[in-house]
Length: 151
Image (cartoon, rainbow, N blue to C red; front, side, top):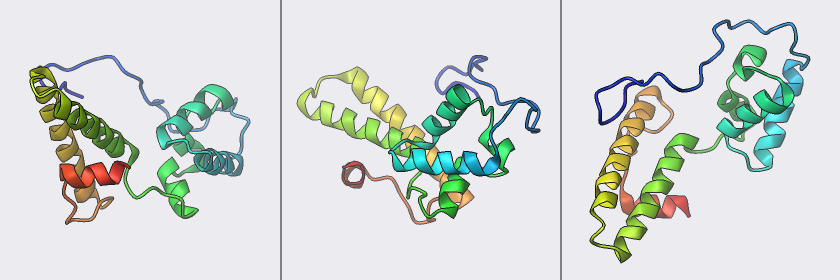
């Protein structure tokens, strides 16, 4: 993915497994993986952390290749899917904290600039989720409503 403000493409970052086939060394069954996903979500973990924990502690390289469903689809089938995607909520929390900081430190120009960048990310991500059907078409980011959403 290209960097936001530098017109360069970064090469670092984790890569998905190239082959979508489950390796022979994976000992967990699809039903066990789904049960673990539901259990971890009930403990309060986000989807990204669930996938990371399954990879690091249980040796499952990809939940989607093992079960045929993503973590969000597994949680949706159980009726546990969150109302908003985790990445969008994390960005909204960051923007709310930055606005709170700016109320007390009005002269922090670098924070003002970074707040604009974060809110741009939120708007781009919300547009993607509206087009893909995860968010309703009428959903719009408003900072005052976002503060209520995060609480």
